[in-house]
Amino acid sequence: MQIRSYSLNKNILQVPSSFRTEIFLDACPAAGNDSSADSKAYVDLQYLIDASGSNIAILDEGQTIRYVNRAWRQFASQSGVVAREYGIGCRYFDLHKGTAAAAPSDLAAIVAGINRIIDKSEIDFQMEYRCTAVAEPVWFRIHAASFSFPNHDGRVMILVSHDNITLEKLANTSLMRDKERLQRLLDTTNIIPWEACAKSRILTHVGEQAEQMLGYPAQVWLEPDFWISHIHPDDRETTLARSAAFLRSTNQFQYEYRMIAANGRIVWINDIVSVERENGKASRIHGFMIDITERKQ
Image 1 (spheres, rainbow, N blue to C red):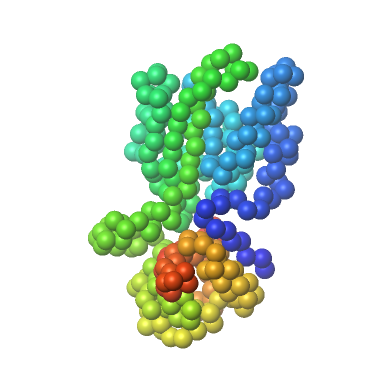
Image 2: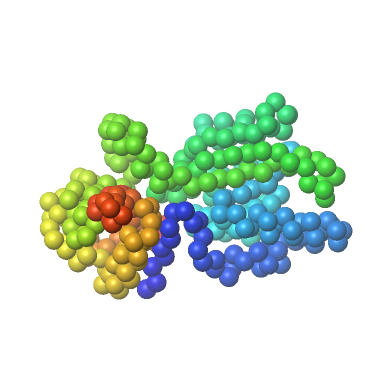
C-alpha cells in the first residue's frame, strides 16, 4: 500500500500521468477548433495555468468555463466529477461540483463578485468559502480578475483561482480561541483535535470525537504507543518514516494513512499537523485527524 503524502506548501508533488497537460489537450477538442495561431495560443495558455498549484478556471463574459488547469482537474476527480472536460462549457454557477461546489449563499456572493468584474465596477474580487464537494472540511480562497486574450478578439476573460486554505482555517489562532465556534465545527464534521510529544509520539490530548470515530475511549489514546500500534500494519513503517522526515523539514504538513478501529474496521485518516520547535528541534505537535473513509470507498 502506497501512502499519499504532501507538504501543504506544495499542492502537487507527483502528477499522475492521466492529468498530464498533453494528455488533457489530446482529449479536449477545443485545442484544435481554431486556426493554427489560435490553437497555439490555447496550448500556451493551458501549459501556463497547468503550472500553477491553485485550482484555476477561466470564464468568458457569460461565466461559462472555457479553460481549467491540472489542479482543478485533480480536485474534480477526487470529488467525483468524471466528465471528460471537468466543467468546460458549463456555467460556473451551474456546475455545483468539484472546486465550484459551495453553499447557496456563498455561490451567490461569488457570482455577484464575478459579475462586478465583468461590468467593470471592480478590478478584482476575493472571498473565502467552504467547498461542499467532499465530506471532509475544505476551504478555498477564491480570487477573480479580468484579462484580454488574443484568440478571443480582445474579449474579456475572467481568471478565477482557488487556493486551498483548510489548514490555515483549522490552525488559525482566532478560530482556536473561539471555543464555541470550534466546537460547532468539530461536532458537525469527522475531526479529532489532538496534541502529542514530537519525540515520543505519545498523545497528550485528543478530543471526545476520538471514541466516536474509532471506538476507543479518549483516555486509551493517551497510552504509550497507542497511535503507532493502531496504524494499519501495511502503512505503519511508511507513515512513521514520512512523519519523521516532515518533522525535520517543515512546520506544517499533512498525510494519509489507515487506522484500525476497535471493531476491526479500517478507517482512512487525513492527518493535518502543525509543529512547534525549541532551539530548532520539534518539541510539540498538534493537529486534526479527519476521517476520509467515505471518499476512499
